[in-house]
Image (cartoon, rainbow, N blue to C red):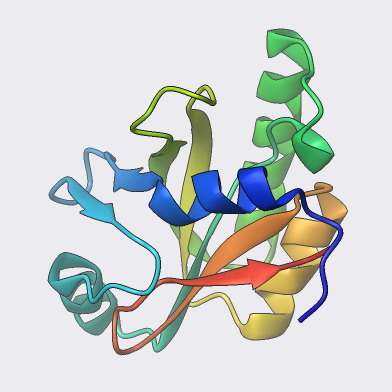
Length: 142
């Protein structure tokens, strides 16, 4: 697939740690294209067959103020709740420190269309998409 995303940024996405740290579930870390048993178990327990990991921070990887990012993330929470979906808090972090971590939501039960729609609505380059196998995949949106 051809993408407008800078290859260096794609490399950061691929090596990042995607942490779920919500008080409602045990903490765990996901990596792109690697099975994540805690994710699979959480999805199974929650009765969902899909999920996504999405943020509203820094659309198109263009830095915004903390105030703008916090406000956008709250709108994302409201949009997810409006879809009738449950979510857990998380963060996407570059272990090399080249990019600051960004708060994210693990949205349980999000369809592929929901995932793409949320990512595009909040101007994201990419989001993580997961099916029942518990393997996060990078969904490019540009």
